[in-house]
Image (cartoon, rainbow, N blue to C red; front, side):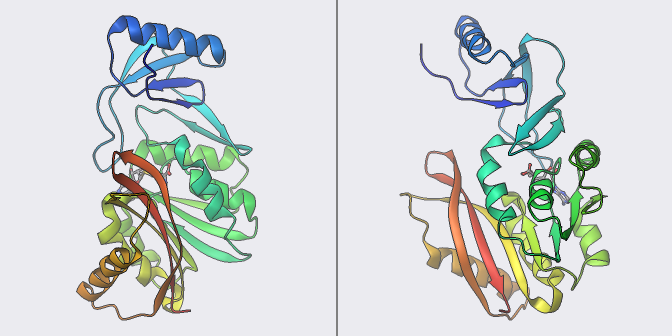
Length: 265
Ligand SMILES: C[S@@+](CC[C@H](N)C(=O)[O-])C[C@H]1O[C@@H](n2cnc3c(N)ncnc32)[C@H](O)[C@@H]1O
């Protein structure tokens, strides 16, 4: 049988490749046998899309309960994949960022989803404060539940709404670190993230997508993009790139990339 692309979120198996019904059913049954905790099987029928980054999923097999708890590095994320974005493939990136956070930092997560980056940070660095902003009401509701579920109520403050409305009013000149986990808004969010750093100093975790012909990221091209964005917004600052990595491949030659930008240091 041809292997199909899939992911498992909590007790839900999501098959990402299309095939005929017999192949899908055989594949699902084999996975359910191998991983008895799988209760529900869904088929992804369209790519992740729109500002809320959700996807079309069709019920295939098992229970019609679409709410699940995904466990990762001792953290728990309650969510419904039909209504919210969540990717187990970002697990390493969450832990990587969490391990960089120092005591007493103030952090803003611009695109928080159901809260996994904020929770991973708060659980690893208990002495910090994270403002976690999310536009999708359903994701924001799950984030509020997840903050409680993971006992992070004193470290994470959820803000439900559009970061481009909220941050200019509430968070200018206030943070040590800003997370931008939404490549779709990479250009628009970078200048605002810079304005949210206290005295222009701190770290921005920028995420972009780029066409790569090999596994190598061309840092000169990345720097040109950053400088063009800053020049357009008339931002003049010293910066350096302390880390960069391919988070995952989205399509052949299209990479989801993490860039850590240190500013004013
Ligand atoms: C790619 S998802 C990442 C979510 C989360 N950080 C994670 O890793 O699971 C991006 C999230 O940003 C939210 N979003 C999109 N535009 C936004 C905006 N202008 N303000 C706040 N949140 C926004 C989407 O609803 C979505 O949940």
